[in-house]
Image (cartoon, rainbow, N blue to C red; front, side):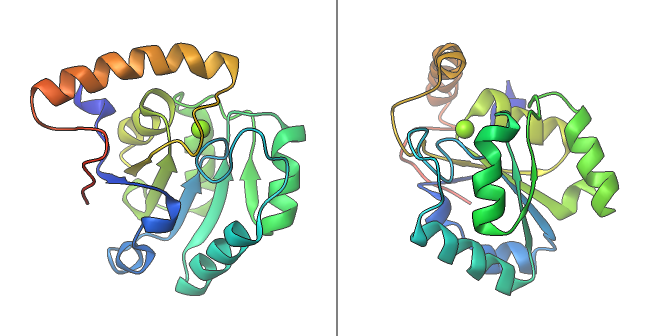
Length: 173
Ligand SMILES: [Mg+2]
């Protein structure tokens, strides 16, 4: 169960302390796309998001999009934000994570992963030994396949909150 527990929990990508991640030795941040950096209804990056990504680049951390969505969905963000991107990643499976670690020649502990889902983003990152960061989903609107994950996610959160280790809205780092 603890494989589903994030190392850090923040309200949104805008409340993460990127400087302190940098100081902790993080070189790459893998950003989930849908409902993490953009609502599922948006097809292009906003000005606010562009500014955030530029600020992260200035810290020396390399932001990369890692999405389970296909190329068509991911491309406008890859181009608009001028970042590298992995699409059809099949998180929480390890294959794409391993590929990324090898391409950029980084150790798992030098990589943080930011996402809005416990079952794909957090579980995938934890089993790889990355720093897992959970943020609240930007909108309550999800893709169909995500709705099933959300059902199981609610059960996991129930389990955690009974044990006092995690609760929605109680942020920590
Ligand atoms: Mg997502």
